[in-house]
Length: 113
Length: 116
Image (cartoon, rainbow over all chains, first blue to last red; front, side, top):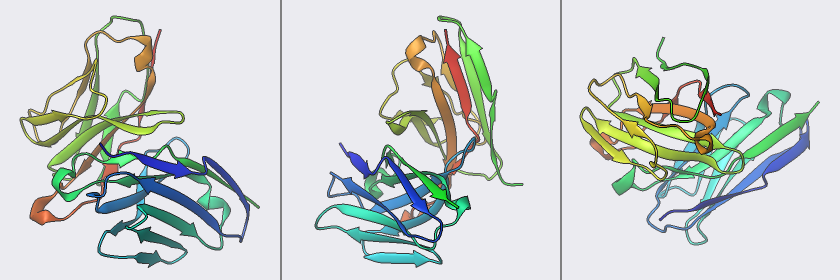
């Protein structure tokens, strides 16, 4: 079955710097890769996603890149702000088994003012 | 307000005492799912439901039951809880894969369960 790894597990950056979180997946059939942000005491919330027919997607300060050959995808946050501090989860699923969404273990991001 | 609600938010119980965690969504979503979140393991899927009366096992279904009698509700049942089921539980819902597309999962606020 699918396995998603995520690095680093914790990340501290100075406000205004960039943050990069990397994930790898094992199932070459995976073709949908969402990223979720979980703030303290809340449930995860989708922040951006990418499909396998796209190499990069950007939404304001966040961007996601996908390398299907290497089976890895990354989240990039530029000009980080204190409100970006949260736990971030990457995930992978396939069209034929969307019901099985496999999450990575999470990255705890701290943005230091 | 569109949302997924869970009750209770916090629960402390003892081994073997049956409990139910309720989940309800008001977005007319077809797909609902339960996850447990444990440190270092991320979110692991327990059970999911593609529609009313249609449920299936996720990756960690042992010790849990679910039912989907109505579209909006998807309760999680622990018939005989054990300490290894101490965890943070999330319910989620989405429109599913209608039309062959993917849809965002909306998560509830979580239920923190402690089994003594």
